[in-house]
Length: 429
Image (tube, rainbow, N blue to C red; front, top):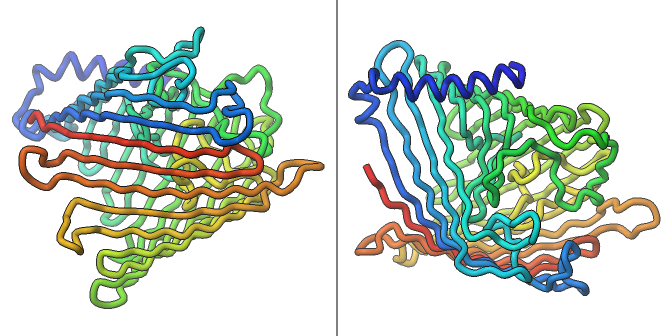
């Protein structure tokens, strides 16, 4: 589908749905609908430990506090061969504390002229949806979570896209996804922009060759399928193409092996092949494997990730990357990098405290090709998460999470970071 046709389809579908729904408001459309209001209170502090501070502005830290609201609505479908429905999401972010010297955490939208955080920002997204049998076509605001495109929701407000997406489950065990995206709304923005290649330390990724006339792409095509062979094994293949930037093929296999009473071994194997599309030099093989041993309320994980080829891993700027060592801050996906991860999780329900969870992990990477006459790149990151969700009483479903990260690198930023997130979702109906 061309970019023009897709844009027209989105506009017509959304408009058509809004005009026809009053006459199609059957019981299922209303009875199956649901709405909720999520409230996020988010504090973030990032200290730059290297000499000179943040290389982009020289500041020693970024620190902000904000309040977010996410109003979500999902309708059911009208009756008939073609069921029609509509989803909507309204977002609002409010500044509680920030400053010109401490902005830039990604929580708040920045003024393009002054670099200061704006007092508020937000967006309204509408999605028309059509269902035939076990297939659903959506057009409008989308938040895909697929190996080749994963919308980011790690800050105050989520990242979203504009486009069309078909999800089909007509065959038992088989899930097919395909579509096209044309615009992205980043997590700290209210603008709908064209998509670009990740700009997270691009020099260490080795990306070159992008024509000066290309400022972004308004076409990301994707397709893929996953098949659940049984309760233990699921395999998948996905394809993604960011027009004028790269092509990507992704294979994934997840296997869960029961080992006895309250014991299991989960294997998650991933491989991606990325090549150029246009005049870029994207050329990457990304292999990753994560093995997790579960023992009662404990789990122990070991991960390995290896990059090869002429560049590092390619993905849409601002999104999450489907890599085993994509963690709180780093992705360990630079040119020729190899990395190891050790992880431990514990669910305190085992000690009679349901709702309390703990996670800690350590990732170390080396062998980064930084170019001629430069030493080998090395980095490490340590993460710790402590989260609690109230199980009953007047604070039931209130969640509190503390996230801590430490990063050290001989080619990137040295960071100490803390995030405190308090969230509550209020069902409206």
